[in-house]
Amino acid sequence: MESQKSPILITGAAGNVGSEVVRLLHEAGENVRAAVVSEAEASRLPAGVAWVRFDFTDPATFPDAFAGVARLFLMRPPHIAQVRRDMKPAIDYAAAAGVQQIVFLSLLGAEKNRFVPHAKVEALLAESGVPTTLLRCGFFMQNLSTTHRQDISENDDIFIPAGDGKTAFIDVRDIAAVAAKTLTEPGHNGKAYPLTGSEALDYGTVAKLLTTALNRSIGYSHPHFLRFAWRLWRRGFPLSYVTVVTAIYLTTRFGLAETVTPDTAVLLNRPPISMQQFIADYAPVWQ
Image (cartoon, rainbow, N blue to C red):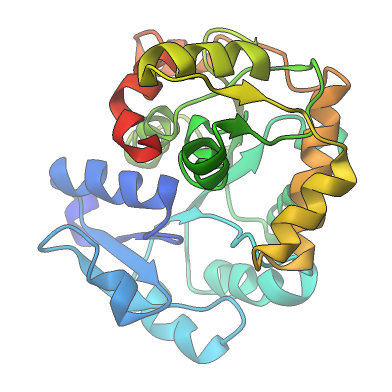
C-alpha cells in the first residue's frame, strides 16, 4: 500500500489544525511524519508518531524532513510574514525532492485578497509546479479557545473588532478531516475548496451562546481596531501577526467573512460541527 511506503509530512504538527491532522492520519494507519520546531513540541504528539525537527528558515532541516515524502500538509507559521523570503526555499526543496502533492491550509477568499500572506503562498505553490490542493478556510472556532480565551475567561468579553459582521466559522476538527481525506484519496490535485461551517453568526450571537453554555454573562465589546491591535501587541504577539489578524477582522466588519459554502458537508458526507457543539466540547477552557 503506497501510504505505507512514503511518509506524509505534516508541518505545524503541534498546532490546532496540524495536531488533529496527525491524529486522524495516525489512527487511520497512515505513515505520518510530524514536523515540529522542538523536542518539547514533539512530546505532545500521539505515542508512536515519527517526528522531525523542521524550520522553514533553516535549510539544514530540509533533507531529513523531506526524505522520501510524497505528500505534504503545508501550513504557514503565523509569525512568517515575508513569505517569499522565508517559505519559498522549503517549497522549492519539496518540489526538487519529489513531493507529488501539497495540501495547503489557506484562507477563505485568499484568491481575491492579495494582501494576506496565504495568497502569496498560493502564488509560490503555483510557481513550484507541484500538484496542489488548497483548503481555503473560514475563521476557526478554536480562535475563541486560544487567541481570545483570556478575554473570555478573565473579562467575560469577546474582544474582537468585527463590528456587526457575520462569520461562517469552521471547527478545526472539520478542516483536519478534510485535509486527511484529500491527502489519502485520489482526485483532489488542482482543487481549491472553500471550507466553512453551516451558518454565519455575528459575535453578539456567539456571546449569547457562550453565556448559555457557561452559565454566566459573556459580552461582545467590538473594540476599535487600534485598541484590539494594541492589546495583542502588549500581550507579546509579533507585529506581523497583529497586523494580519487585525486586517482579517476588518474584512469581517465589512461582511467579507459571511459566505457559507457547502464544500465541508459534501467532502465529509455529514453536517459540519456547529458553534453550539464546539462551545459544549470546549466549555472547560473558558471556566
